[in-house]
Structure formats: structure tokens, C-alpha cells
Length: 320
Image (tube, rainbow, N blue to C red):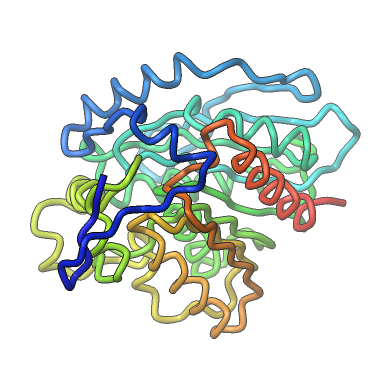
């Protein structure tokens, strides 16, 4: 595998030794063909080992969707320990076109069991069948439901956060913006892991990483086209679609951002974190060296360390 820099010099990723042996076995997710990508992801999900849910309860329910839209299915993960607990809205990744409640089930179990918070995972509508703004509106509706029903869910409304991975990171950042702008639930955390932030894809990492594991710039190009529609480059893009477009980041929830070195999304995540800091938003940024997109899903010691970090971030922000 190789990449080419803007100057044309060959670059070969020096992957972390725990990750390098995995690279050749990672299947290609053809985001340009959403049905094919969904089938591939479903096949991967079927191979994942079961997770221990003995310390939590897991339920699903349909909650009111945005005005004029269908109900939204959510999965609720509740610690068996006495509450009230903090509440975390979790938004799965998948390039806006794939993924479901199973995709990041293991993360939700971990946050509920180890960070001791109630997790509400959202099954939002997917593009291209349901382009923007369907996904963020579904997620925001789930946040409003979580806050309005906090007492019955065992949640303390002073300890609410949003989190998401990849496209879920974009949606979590968007929900944070929406809640600020709409006078919605007060958030004390936005956890953005490997987040999609900007549709312009004009960073050095976006230009450089055309053939990296899991996610590459061609994936981003197809993903934004499905999400925003053909010709989106010629139209104004809402910051609720691409949070990097937001001019004012002040007053947003404290953030923690995770990025990976060999990921085309790296620089937009880092830039967003720096802009949050400049706007006075408390922000932690961890750039993981020698890693690729969502490396934390691959059962290595490195993945365990990344999981421990995000669990601690959630526990510190939402814990009693």
C-alpha cells in the first residue's frame, strides 16, 4: 500500500507493529455502492464475538422522530448500579450510508458498564435514500427524547453528552451545534472519535491518503456525494452537515477529539479541535501515531488503550 504526497513523493505508512499485520486482511467497504458496503459491513458484524452485558440491561424502543418524520429506533443501555446516571447519546459511524445499532454495540456496552452511564444509541436514517438533514434531525430528536424522559431512564439532566465515531462524530458535533442554537438540552461533553468534519476535503491528510485502510479520500468523496447530493460542491453547505463550516464555535460542549495519523480525516479533526480551543471551549485532543481510521475496533493492545482513554473521558464528564 502506498500514498502519494501533493509533491508526488511516495509515502509508505509506517503502521504501528500491532496494526501492520492486520492491514492486508481488512475488506474494502465500497462506499460508492451503498448496498454493497452495507452487505460487507453486515458480514463483518456477524463475525464479531459477543460482548458481556451482565452488568447492564439493554432495551430497544421507538421514540418520536422529527416533525413529519417516522419514529426513531433507539437502543438503551442501562447500568444495573443505582442511579441517577449520566446520559450519553451514541451515534454510530458508517459514512452516512451504512451502519446500524449493531455496528458499535461493543462501545455502548463498555460505556454503560465501565463508565457507569446510560447510553442511548440512535438508528438514524441513512443516505442516499435519506440525505441531509434526515440523520442529524433524527439524532437531535433522540437527544430531546432522552432529556425529556430522563427521570424514567435514570438519567441526571445535568450530565448529558453526545458521542460518535467517524460519520457519527460529524453527527455528534452537529447535534452539539443544534442544541446550542435551538436552546436544547445542555451538554457537558462531545466525544468525537475519528470525526468527519468538513466536506471541502482541503487538508494535507485528505489530499495525501488516497489508499489507506478502512477509509480513504475516495471514500469521503463518495460519502459526501450520497449525503449532500450531486453537485453539492456548488451549493452552500450547512454546518449541521459539515460542522467545520460553522463560523462560531463558542458556547459548545467541552470536547474530546481522537484522530489517527494515517487517516484522511485527521487534519479536519485536529483543526476543529484547535478552533474549539480558540473559541474558549475546553477541548482534549489525542492524535494517535502510526494508526489508521477506527483502529480501536481491532482487538489489539493499542485498541484496548484507546478504549480505556475514551471510557475515562466519559466517566470523568458524566460520572457522579
